[in-house]
Image (tube, rainbow, N blue to C red; front, side, top):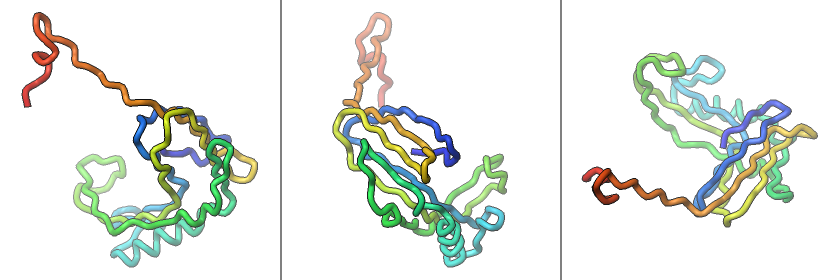
Length: 162
């Protein structure tokens, strides 16, 4: 779930199918072999140092996460980093970098909420007295959408052959 980290934060409403875990990204940084400094590194060691340094500056200690009125303790314990990962940039990509392969490392605070039971959940991320983002999450049984029948045929006739 993406967040807007500038108070006052938005309220984001979403529907999650029953049985699906919810990932919350609380903040952190990516560093890559194509971004300009301070988010640039030439190799895995530089990328790890870069991402960790940027995440160290993130104010997680001033933040509170509340799920349905219950505060999640010790947000600092939810920090992790990714393995060195490759990404292929196409021509005319949104980063404005040359087409080709780059590498990156992520270091961030985030965690998974195990698949919650059907119902409504409120997830609020605050910094001091400022609300950064509020999520109104509705967990519902998945909807099954049946294909429409083709004119003069059965629903199977409207489904392309594999």
